[in-house]
Length: 304
Image (cartoon, rainbow, N blue to C red):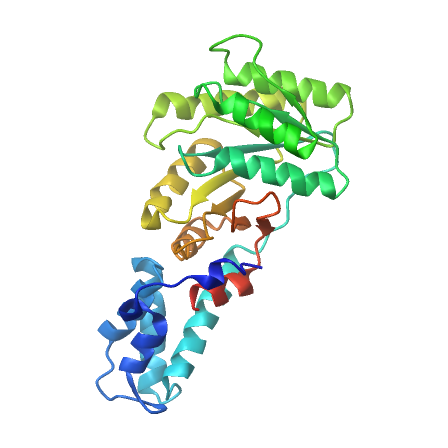
């Protein structure tokens, strides 16, 4: 997993290894290593202030107590701290599809985060696992969104429900798709939604309407509401996640765009604060480049 994101090549002066080396002489820590130095290490990983403070306090105590005596030991302790957090607070990484059919998954997020693309890749993955998939083109706000999803439907061999008129309500399109999914015994209905800023309250309320419409057709649906987070946005993903979760109740994250220089370390802060797991990561443009989240592989990648 994350084989592509492991090829990240940040500037030499900001790499974890260079910072480690600057704090060590041979295999031993320099006596001048301070909390500030440790904070620089965490900021290099873009973990965010809250996590940084927690980790630095813990490591500083271990260093003063003589438990950590080399740069490599600090790095291993950092990795363990981040991994423990992800496994403790974000451990339910499997999709929870329940026993009623169809299972309904809503994909939500801000503009440009890779929402529709992630839905297409998820459809491909689920279909390859043997599920009968129906797509719902619920992004009625962006003119090209339905066309984009129709391309994904053709590419993955899935059926799709689109609006039968311009400016149709998203909740209507999605409810029609769920009804079809129920009548024709589809296993999963994947619902695209309009990309929106978390500060756009009218569009955020549209999500509430979509969620209610789905629940009226299939009790307990939607089974999953997955928020797509752009791995290049840094700490901006935290207020996004807070707002979307408050409005519709997010059940998991899809972390995208980890195929370039982005490490996505800020998602650790999101998982820590909200207790919501990362379920998938996008590591490229290919149809197979949406991978189940593996906490250990992710931590190894952001520390590479």
